[in-house]
Length: 633
Image (tube, rainbow, N blue to C red):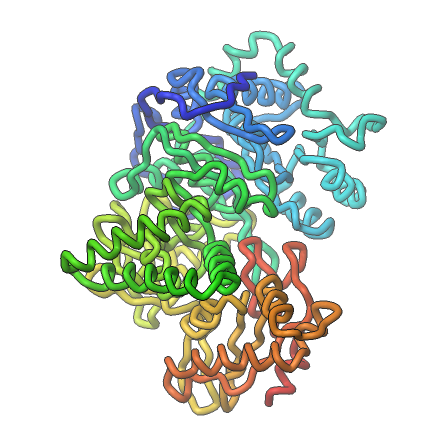
């Protein structure tokens, strides 16, 4: 392995790439676009062909970095290809065939990507599973996908499988990345990654057979299964083809300025469509450097260490950075607070004026030199060229605040079923509050009921084993997104989800997303769910931001012993009441929140009330906390 630590290398020229896999014979053809002519990127009609072509072309150029013993280590594109080949041929030796599903249960790391492309390279289907999923959820996902092989990161994830292995007789072999805590394990059904590498390297004619398998891939092959969050039932396995991914890469090329020497940080789960697109597929296309965060707890530190050129995150992450900065301001002295405020005011003044005056520009330059430049360095954004947000609504005020400090965040919109991006704001065309204009080769229209419909070559093949659900979401070649929105001057605006629309007892239709976004702009509120369907008035369940509210409590002599007592403290309730009152002023009386309650149970990634992107699941929250809701009526 190449372990050069170091400064950014001089990149070689970038190219593009494409993947394919044999679609299972028992799957109905759900999307007619998959019958169309292939999409070519650099002469490749599948992602995995493009990957092989670029790995061999870029050779020793850095592809990935990962921390080991506190030091960033580098791994080349040739490492990427060779390790994937070893895994692929090892799986073949174990009996894996084209069309088989192989599931990956691991946090983000380079091995995740090696396995992903190895699986695709032999025509098999990669299925990512969230590490926060329970053992019972694991049974469902492995059974529904009929996975023949399971790849897990460590002993924790292996034990999850072992607790339910009797329910999964179709799993032929489990491969484990990390031997720590498992060195004495003897089990014929379990193999360590090092042993799989050895098996693959010993396979006869490995290089020739792997190259031939890649060459045999087709645009209609399933590149990956992406399971939706399942907020209203069991997760659905969206089948994303090689053609879908190439269409997405082709559509994004004119609107996102991706450079071959871009540094980026990978930290969202790789089984989520957004992270898969930005940390796997786009780097294969452009040759970016992907740095893996050590863990979700170290993302902020890693961000400062890498200082990426491009960075993609969900709104909750941007909210956390903002809240941290506001807390630092609160701890600063009076003069420092004044300087910070003046710098923000100057940033807003310049951004809000189509033609800032010379005085305004000079003032901003002064405050940028004195305050804002250091602030961007503090949060790891001093090199940022393109920051993106997606997967959930974000407050326009938050975007404006980031603009004021010199970090422009481009909001986009997409979903698993669109294989990523449907629309996005760009440096050339941006309107805060919208999710941008549809990307090239993508048609968007609004149905009579306000639902957003989309048509593009990137639209998914259908849901695995669910032809009825596929038929519900794919009608006459259009994807019915379930989101409500409108088009203004070519820009798409999302107003909510059809299933989330509240119809009050008075017959008023209210989309709660805008209210919830305004509440979450407060550093003291982590998430909120507005209630009121068939009721006389609106109420709200609120999840406070633990870190920021604890800090507030400490600064204001609020006694608490645990999270529950913190949520019950009168001063904390008064604090949240003030936030709610301030937000109410921005809405009509029928849209104002009359009462609220705090969810006094600390929720984490493992809790079923939260999605993988840390959003509250409305239906589950309403079910679990019905007593709190009833107390407000």
